[in-house]
Length: 529
Image 1 (tube, rainbow, N blue to C red):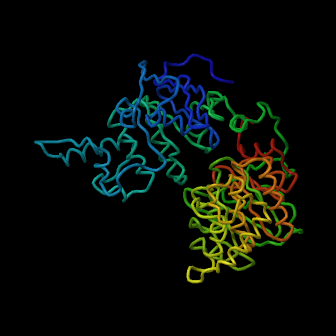
Image 2 (image 1 turned 60 degrees about the vertical axis):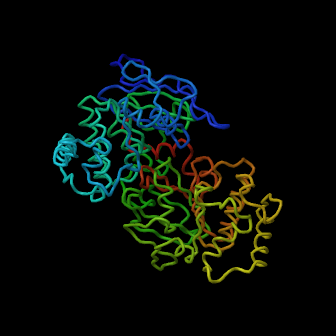
Image 3 (image 1 turned 135 degrees about the vertical axis):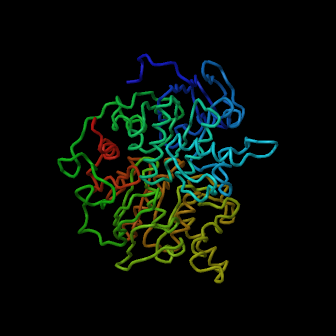
């Protein structure tokens, strides 16, 4: 239930904040209250409006409507510096400091203490040490910031807010690149600041961390505030339901695997198969790729994963659950720091994506514009990029062969374009996605990783792409399919691995899960479900 009980006067109030961009209503009448001595967590799926709300609050965007009230006074921050001068300090996921400068210099940058007209280096180091000790951090502040890990760098960024006596501290996805010990360190500092009466707004997509630190939770969905809740009164299942827009009341289902435990109630580092308790189809498919203990610090807890020939393996989970991180490790786009990958019984090491391509793996990234389509190049040029990369730049693919391949796949995938020489940027999103799919098909991959291949395209194009993908599986190609749309994952997958908080939450055969039970796996470990 949304909070209605009395509470201390809020330090900060957002009242009816709205913000629109061309053709998109990013925020619609959003309200938020931050109270002294509380950690208030902002939750929501990708596109819910969290980032836009933070940018309005910190002066990056000017709201179209609504009011920001700080300590009883209406304010209109015009920049991040202006917001900071009002007492609103922000620490971002990517620490915005100078790694070549010392810790002390980073804390005092722009406001160096002076003595007799010169910078008081000794006094600055003393004050910096004292500020960090208030957070139980004891380090040499004269060393360059780059000498310390990211967690410590974030503490340095937080200490700047103490220097300017911030009333509100905003932490925007601060734990995305931290390991478990570093998260514990950060949370210890936040609890200390909470005891000192600071109002803290914590933006995250990790369920475990939300319940470890939060006093209050606001859920956003589709640019609107769904509700504000005391963390103690909101179960994990209810939180996930509210984030994805599922019915408000969903009965607890029995474990799809037939076990007594709750669905997906497993720890990190286990194999997905053992996590779910039952993985169907082992006799039907032969293993193509096996990953054992595959992980990367701050990105993915070591996990086991098996992908079989002619199988469509779905990865389900919320934003930040580890789906894309796992895909990037399998493709060599990011380097794993633990585990091994075996293909057809032979261990492989992927130093770069080119190594993965040579091993028969293709990867359609979720970011079509940044990591996929080269918008100024033609359909033909985009289509042959992966094949050219595999061949090497010294072995150019003849133009006639390029044209032949482009014409063949434009026809096979029903790509609507005036010509194969038309710039891909002028095509619809669905047709761009088909070109990117064709880019990897021309390399004749054994495994194709599809990360959100149907995001942002119309229903008909989605159906055409997924029908084609299913046909590829029937011909023996392995598919790793990632999608935020649970009905789509459930409909097309032979097996499903559910990810949560950067680890495998369970593996299930086709038909073992529905939308209700998937949500319970995502929210595993909840004692109030």
